[in-house]
Image 1 (tube, rainbow, N blue to C red):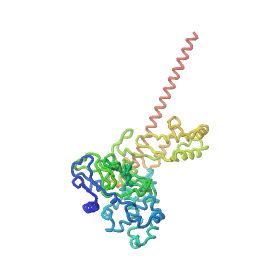
Image 2: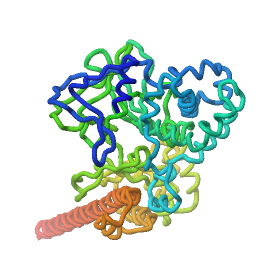
Image 3: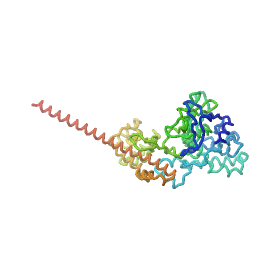
Image 4: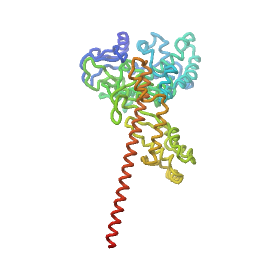
Length: 496
């Protein structure tokens, strides 16, 4: 890493080499280690804004021209940034970022690069549908290739098959997904710089969903960072970023690893610089961690190719990711509510979508049914008269659990569990023999098992709630019966 550090400092980056070093860390790849005890609030390194790599700082957009840039759709999603990275790489030592691009990872364990057999291990999870490989390849052929072919003076034909390939496009997209930040233009009221590394905005290797790092307000004129991997800026890489030009690669900052609730440094910004500053006291020999914002394992795997496993909190037991979630599709809810009247059912579904635009429900490790899911179940179970009142008031049903909702909710969880090809017991047995598992298979098992724990835990909580409701109703009826008996006795005494 000496050559990278030399490049970084030659480009006006500053590094406190007495406090930290970048080195290989077993099980974590490259990362930052504290060389001495570092106090909270200490600046580890500073990156000039013009050393970040984005569509704002690369020369390509201006060379191509704004009109052409937009004509080819490079102003939407990650395709523009990926093309800039491909072009900068093609410039070799002439590129301002040559010393940075040369040390970026060239292999990833993210599902984007898995075989079909490996992807089968993720069946039942929402990961596969979010990889965005098809969308990424569509952007490559519809945006990048036409751009490259239109300007041979910028993209020499001899370099086309060397640099502007689909393989390289996916590689650059994955680098953005796992390492980028959201770096907005400086304004007096700017407060945050966010990690951007995911995709869901239609561009890069998929879409962009903003999950990279985010930069928050600096204790000294700036903002702090929280990695987001731009999770969905482009489906595979960035999720809905307001301005794709905010997505940037940040040399040195992306060398720090992240782990659940371990963050001890964040990226802060000032008008002309970004600064990595410690947020806690860091002891000599400890790893310096940035943060991903603690996403679920499904997102960690999709964006970064790894998972986090720590002790879980009640009502769950064992180990997993406390931020794990399970996605439940609305069509599965409709299927579970099979006893609902079919008359006007589609009308109710359309009304729900118009009023909520919500066709997926999220259950977390608290194992509680979300209120919107309960409300949707109640809508499906309404009588025609109740449905007419709901339409007239244009108000969602109250999210209250009752005897009618319980069986539908439990059936829904059973159906959702059946979408995984393996059981909890089978997955646990597989994890007990780690020597027989590849890293990818082990990570896939951890993801799907975490989701199954949530579904089983939620089912257990529903059974408890239903029994509590039954006990309450039984007690209420008993009190009514007792009250009626007392009233009858009193009446007889009065007649005497």
